[in-house]
Amino acid sequence: METWGAGQGVVWPVPARELTQAQRRAASSEWGEHRRCWRGWYVLRVAGGSPRQRVAEAGVLLVPPSAVTGWGSLAWQGARWFEGTYGDLTPRPVVIASPRRLFRPRPEVLVCEERFDPREVVVVDGLRVTDAVRATCFEMRYAPNLRAAVRALDMACYDDLVSIEEVSAWVSVHPSYTGIEQARLAIPLGDENAWSPAEVDFRLDWTELVGRRPMTNRPIFDLSGRHLGTPDVVDPQTGVVGEFDGPVHLAEGRRAADLRREAAFREHGLHPVTMVSAERRDQSAFHARVRSAYAAASRQAADERRWTLEPPAWWAPTWTVAQRRQLGDGDREVWLRYRHG
Image (cartoon, rainbow, N blue to C red; front, side, top):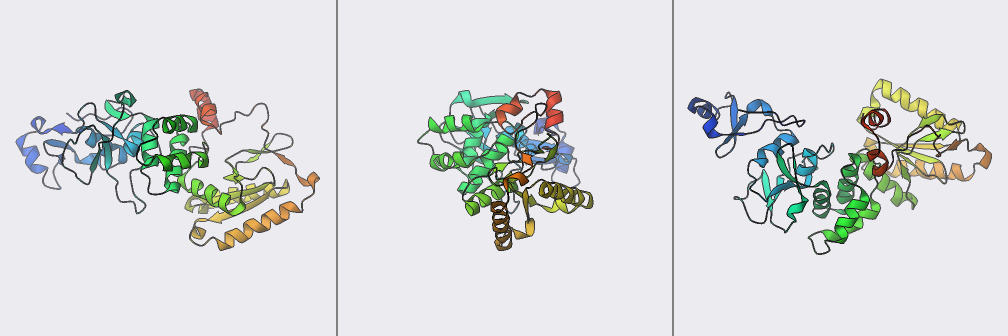
């Protein structure tokens, strides 16, 4: 009988022997209650094809000591941004770490036969997966380019599954693994407080343009401790702040709030600059606005700076993994609500 994976929103596949002959025959039709996911295995058709469902279906192929790794492991452990797709949104295979080949290659599942330590395998909701640090390093090592490796690191940190320090420690003791140099180069570019993959690219673009790295999602206050807003990036030396507005910002209520916040920033001596998603391909106009903002900041008198990055005593800082891990469930609901909205 199918059972939903604990906290995962998935349906476990069942062996063919648990279905009637009529149910197995019907599975070959789109009208059948079940569909065949592998030879000898069936799953309810209503299960769909979510990332976690795909991982659950791959899980029936596991033979100890093998385990799901890479994006599948991170998605199974609750990582929001690991959806198992390529840039064109076609599905990526679920990767299984195994000391030997378990089955013939197939598009849905890939076996990686590189060596791994069985102590890095954990059982989460009944499924064997490599721990988050190894899974993150796998994604970084096999990412198609350095930027994609940085995205993988940042988005694993987003859900506090890993810290940059933990990833750095793993990389340092596995110097001969495939792709390890790319992972090593990505670490100093990573940030534990990026809120989406688009923000990672925005920060990297900003750094390349300006020549120094901004702070990400750092709350800004007026001099009395009132929270003015939390921009995507802020240059603490100049007060130039950057925002990346994706499609969600076009909603009427959200746009009005964005404009009020931008006005508040300007009133307190900050210099906001916004990039819209349509400017991702050609950033020339955005670059001109950034240069203009830095020029204005350079002409600003010191007494016009009426803002600070120093939080008031009652504010709980949440810009590192260590800080977020220290929060209790109640505090996480309060202090991370907007971040996870």
